[in-house]
Structure formats: C-alpha cells, structure tokens
Length: 83
Picture 1 (cartoon, rainbow, N blue to C red):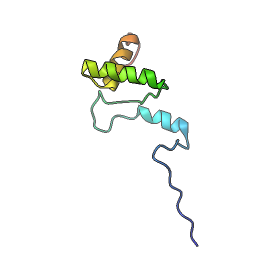
Picture 2: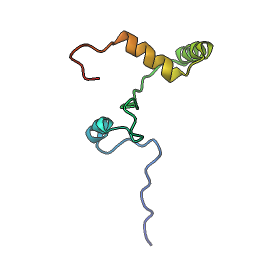
Picture 3: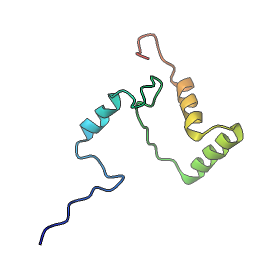
Picture 4: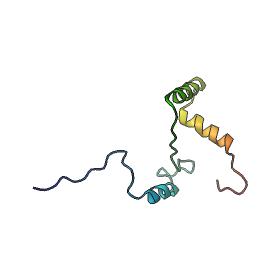
C-alpha cells in the first residue's frame, strides 16, 4: 500500500524560517515599487482589535491602511534609511 503524500496546511510554518524571512526582500510580484515588502503579525486582545476596527470604519479606511499610516508617522524614515 502506498503512503499518502504529506500535505502542508494552508498556514503551515516554513521549514526554514531564515529563508522565509529573507523572502520578504524579493521585489513585489506586480512590479509596483510601493507594493508590500513584509507582513507584520502582532497579538492584540479581542477588545483592542474591536476598537481598532471601529476606529478604521469611522475614518472610512481599512485597518491595514490606518495602521500603515500610524506606523509611518511613529517611525519616520531617517536620512540614512533606504526608502
């Protein structure tokens, strides 16, 4: 009897984390320079998540766009940083 092939789950962790992290340095697939270069995952309480979603809705923006703007304001590029 043959064995079933091992299937990785949709959100399976990478076998080689270093390669996975460095993969963010690859150019965006759509060729757009302003494309995403990395994904940031944070843990927040369900209450805070709800407050963030409500604030974004009231402002008429997505949570991702609102948080990108917040992070850009909080951590502006300095003269030595590549953009």
